[in-house]
Length: 246
Image (cartoon, rainbow, N blue to C red):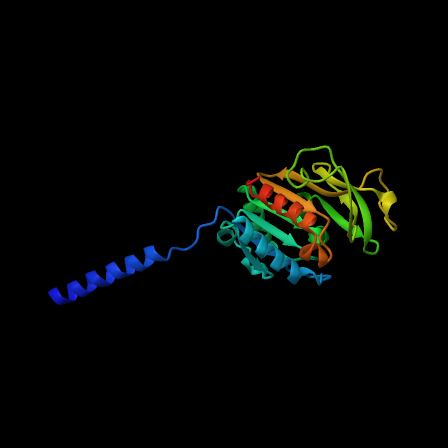
């Protein structure tokens, strides 16, 4: 009995030493990137996912990725400070998953919608209010002039007053009056817009039901994620703001 007790004590000591020697990494922020599509699937998604993983590595936050909506459960979502809907399309969450996502936002979670996130969950009014608008159409990919809004926000603070980018420029059938625009499109600078409005927001943010929501209509092309450092900084700062790390 004494011999067995000694072995047991030594084993426990070794386990404790090994555990303390190789602790799990602790990150100040964890981000979930969600990529499920039930409609059009952007070819840029794999490249975008890799870019976001690298972004997290370079900026000290962890990035998990999934296209599996069954992950949307209360316990799972609560591990993250930000959930990114990356070019999602169509009806991606069932009613149970929707409730879990609502609770996550109401508990103070952050949301980032990228490009086709506004082409998602058209029949779920709550989601429309969260993302801040719904896509309706777009012309061909082409250059256009962006105009920075007169508001302080890390997603645009580093930008000049106007800049030209190449992307797929969304028209919206509805934009919430609750959002604060960050970037506008100059509709005279490109061809094919069907927005019948004096102004054309393309990126915005707002506080929503206890959480934070940031949306950017940029991010259609693969080049956006491989060599467009301006867009990547815009997106990074939006993520950090949504996660309250600005």
